[in-house]
Length: 126
Image 1 (cartoon, rainbow, N blue to C red):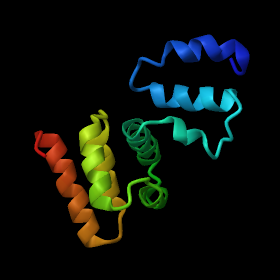
Image 2 (image 1 turned 180 degrees about the vertical axis):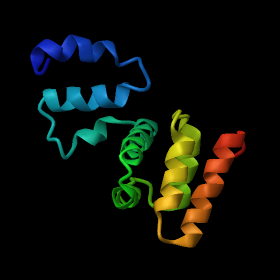
Image 3 (image 1 turned 90 degrees about the vertical axis):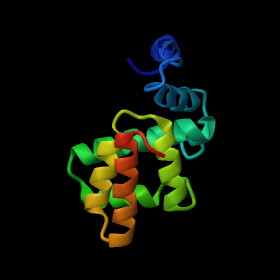
């Protein structure tokens, strides 16, 4: 269902962390917010969750170059800042995303840092 008939169902999932960012974006666009500005309705944590979720979908399709571009499109200003936020957000696919990103990235130093972050998430470290 698209448009106004879907609104109650979209609002009903606002309390579900995995769906909340998508619902907020849908509602913003439904309410007339420019799609280019819709991301502004998300908290930093919600935006990071969405970044990981989107990266997981990209990784599932084996799109290594797109995954690297996705890293470059992150809202965090540096890779270490992104990794800190990704580790903290608690997305269930964080380790898989980081492993796929490390395998895809052409910079060995960056790939090593991403692998280290994946290991830290996997072992529960910080």
